[in-house]
Length: 103
Image 1 (tube, rainbow, N blue to C red):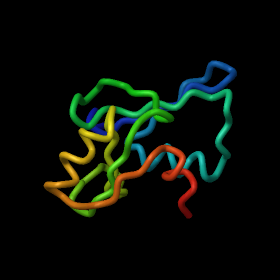
Image 2: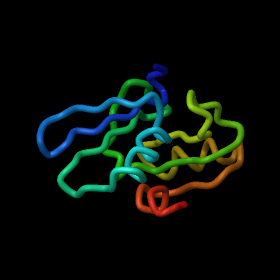
Image 3: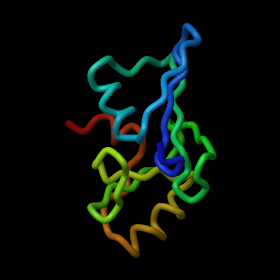
Image 4: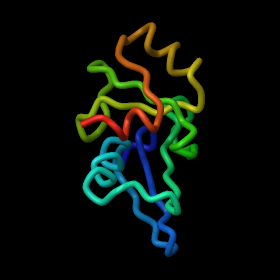
């Protein structure tokens, strides 16, 4: 697992699930549903291994981002950090809510 893209979930029952990338977490949620009582975490692209609250994070989707599972997605602690990389790589900036509402 690449710590730059890692993601995780803590269920309301205390079960911890880990994912190789943010897109794997999003796919899991699309299949199993988004539950308010669960906690969702993503790794900060600029500080690999530093976990962020996914619901408060900013995401960049760009074909130039080579995340482990091919979703081309990176998470950031704030929009300014995402915009900095977007200037270099292009792509679309999204919130957690926008990311999970995509088909």
